[in-house]
Length: 151
Image 1 (cartoon, rainbow, N blue to C red):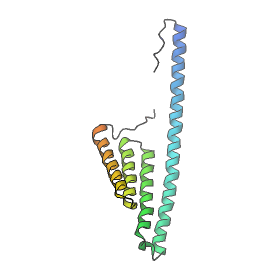
Image 2 (tube, rainbow, N blue to C red):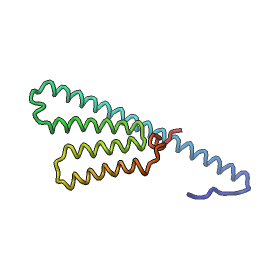
Image 3 (cartoon, rainbow, N blue to C red):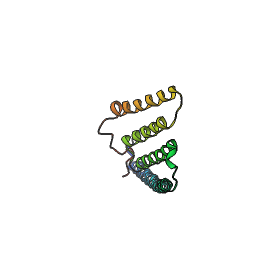
Image 4 (cartoon, rainbow, N blue to C red):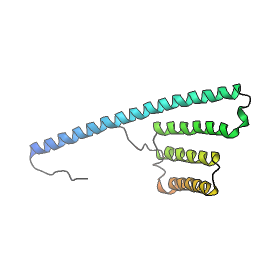
């Protein structure tokens, strides 16, 4: 980051201060626009997830053989759960929520995939790494703090 210009000329100081205020206003407007875009995306995603959940519940009652393929049921329902966690992360961007979304997504992969044991071991190591990050790298007072402040 560059050092602020030090000068004794009052006109130049005024120009520098005016430029800094303008930059802060522009940054504030961009942060507001991005936050609004995140909220709109969260609402759209939530709507789509509610529709998917409704369709899934209708299939459960209409199709008598729906529960014969448990893998398919788990795949659809856990995809909706991961989507809901993603919406929560978009609305409230805290380190705790981000770690929870990653944990749920990796756990879903472990439950649904029947890959080789090395892949499962890698997923378990990733989950352990996420817990270690939460425990040792993020202070407890930062877990519930918004990552991006909107003035």
